[in-house]
Amino acid sequence: MKKILTICVSLLFCIGVLVCASTDVFASTNSGFCGEDARWSFDETTGTLTISGTGDMYDAENGYLLWSELSDKIFYVVIEDGITSICNRVFYENKNLKEVSIPESVTSIGEEAFAGVALTHIELPDSITYIGQQAFAGSQLEEITIPSGVTELPFRVFSDCKNLKKVVLNDNLTCIGDYAFDKCSSLQTITIPDSVTEIKPSAFEDCTKLTEIGIGKNVTSIPFACFRWCDNLKEIFIPDNVISLEQSAFADCRSLEKVTLGAGVKEFDTTVFSDCTSLQMFVVSPQSDTLANDEHGVLYSKDMKKLLLFPMAITGDYVVFDGTQVIGFRAGFQCKSLRELVIPDSLMEIGDDAFYECVSLRSLDLGNGVQSIGGMAFYNCSALKTLIIPASVTFIDVHAFGSTFDEPFEAISFLGNPPQIDASSSIINTDEIWYPAGNIEWENNFPGKINATSRHQGCEGSHNFVREEIVQPTCSQEGSTETVKCQTCGFTSVSGVAIPTIDHTYGKWEYITSADSASEQRQLKHTCTACGHEETKFADQVDVSELPEETSKDTPSDMGTIIFIVIGVVLVLAGVGVVNLLRAKKAKGDSL
Image 1 (cartoon, one colour):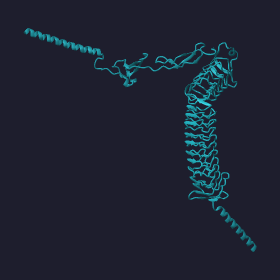
Image 2: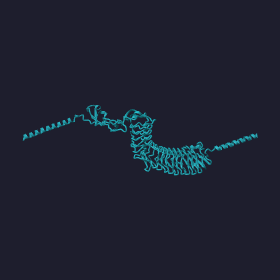
Image 3: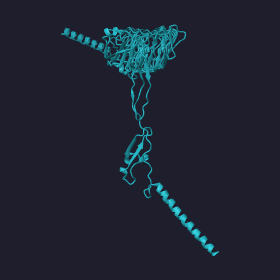
Image 4: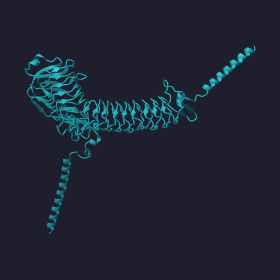
């Protein structure tokens, strides 16, 4: 019995010990270890998380920390001196965090440590030498100063910080990473220090309020999409130290008006300024040995033998520099206000997509030297209705004159032998095809890629055009726009378009019915002063202010009759007076 009692007491003691131990483990939910020699504690009354001790913090496992369940209650964080690192994802997506205090002992901030937090301000000590990827991505920061110890900003470190207005980069920074400030839509200015030697792709992409850029003296390349979609940039200056501008570097900067290129630029991708629809001019340093610009702000090679790029906002008519031999890839891509283009005889090659979707281009003079026309070179140039292909052309590449809707040309005139047309090209549709009279090549080998409603024999070498001037319309006859027609073969390069008649110029209204008629039945008319056309209306159809003045209804309406009667009365009275006067004299004489 004693033995059984002893065993029961022992079991009860063990259970008591276990309960006490368990209670000790779970009693405190507001503190614990967060590193080998680092502890954390949370004060619910103030909403303050304190991290103390020494050394590094543990990284969050699967995004979970011991205080994760308290994250919504944490408003303030105090990291005490002695802690050397802030671990990965430590405050990830904390939407209530207002303030963080970081001591000089901290040397690194982990990946996504403050990503998505509500912080608007944070001071980073100069002791920090490493900041992890996306460390502050999506946060509410309004300004940031990069510590002097940090030499590289990593991938998306401040990406999508939509409230970030001010960034101060230190003079020890050497690299700005991919998408580092992507979508910082409140950032207005950025100055890249001379210490930076590398900027990675899309570093400042979609910074829509960015208006000023300062590029340091050791940057040699502006990478892919670096400043794409910076919609408020109006002018940029590329310093002499920059050698290459990579694909889409400034694409879609829709307010950009002027680009100044330094003497160092040698490598130039023609997509750099794609969709910069306000761009009016390029200005190239006179010291450049690779590039030049003409008086219209069009970009050429230094020797003027290659036309590289039109500013997209170019308007009206343009004559390519005489001596140019090549128009490059996408040189005039989507220049939607370009109306007329004249190409000199020196030009031999037009590149792919050269004038793709120049929707206002209505007149094209290809000169007499062009040999090859690139793929989609004039694709979707919907205002271009007629073409003259010079005898020099031997090759037309895929879809060079195609359109999305395969709209036919009014007429195409070939002045030489049939050119080779790319086998995969869409059919060139035209209402009329003109080819040199008596040309056996055309008679025997008519290109199957040309679909013409009718065929005509035309001139060889050149046409003898005569311009029929614009006929101005009148109120009685339609006018017409200018017509340009070959006197020799009849090919019409420019078809006149009818201009509608203009409005009549009428004089004042006048009544054509008696004043005694009912007002609603009285008719009026007025006459065109130019052609004599008459228009009639009833009085109640005419504005009151336009009605002619009425004559009196109580006296004869004929003013001549009135005047005649008045004169008659005056004469009668005068006659009576004369007779009476004579009688008086006679009576007086008798008495004498």
